[in-house]
Image (cartoon, rainbow, N blue to C red; front, side, top):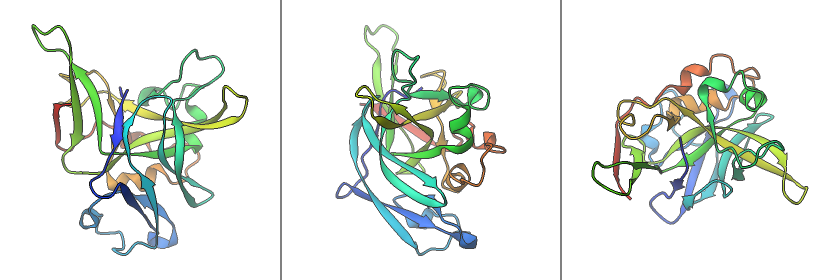
Length: 223
């Protein structure tokens, strides 16, 4: 489950998104530390985009999204939450277990996958004896900047014009998250970002293994 997150990297508010092409093909790697790039990736970026920071992201807001269209990387803002005509509110999360079978998600999972850059996400934890839940800022500690697995689609907005929208994929929790919530957003490793955004894969075959609960170290502190 993800109801709020941030993309708020350290520095001047802009963040470089490096585009690599091992074997002659571009793909995306998002990180604030090039030393953490997988060794198989060339160290020098061939192209890059800058994307703006977002201190607080909520459903219906427009946030930075990265996707591959016809072999080219597109970076730009999209609206958080699918808005199909039958829904009475935006659908901001998609369960990994339903991606390949639900008519809401299936086509997007097959051919409209994207990355959602973030530096933390938020959740609320009940405390025994407390009347209110504690808001927590949660993040992986081995990636200062990371990406959620996302899918996108285009819907008709309230004014009748087309709107590009995205949703964040969720999975069952890992051991760290299970005391907090029974779902968590899928955090991709730098190595898996390329496979998730490879637009040659138009069926989603083999991608389910990328959507496991995050295996790296994580931290949470009151927000």
